[in-house]
Structure formats: C-alpha cells, structure tokens
Picture (cartoon, rainbow, N blue to C red):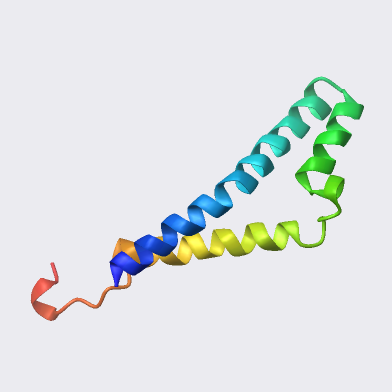
Length: 92
C-alpha cells in the first residue's frame, strides 16, 4: 500500500511543483517590490502572475494549488505511518 501512495505522491509532486514554486516566488517578490522598494508597477505584475489573472485562470488556479497540496498531505501522512494501527505489544 505504501508503494502505491509513494507512486501517487511522486506524480502529484511533479505536477504541483511548478505552480507552487511560481506562487511562492511571485508572493515573496510582490512583498519585496511593494513593501521594500515601493515599485508598484512590478508588484502589480507579480500579483497578476501570482493569481494567474494574467492568463485568466484566477478562479481555478488557487483551487488547483489547494487540491494538489491536499493530495501531497494525504499521501505523505499516509506514508509516514502516523495513522498505522499498532498492536499492544509494540506500545512503549
């Protein structure tokens, strides 16, 4: 079962990594350019990329990011063994 979750975790990570990296970089860049350097034009462009308004995907992009992260959390926590039932002889 863990092999199956590892396979899904790897596939989800590959698919979700680029959008998440883009979201993180543009979010940090927005803060730096807006708050520190007061470059509103660059900050506005970064926010359009951050929300994918640039491509008209502002309604679906956060949902896809969230679903991808939830998939990574579920598969990752399942592989970690936190929810594995332990027999009484294994308790510490």
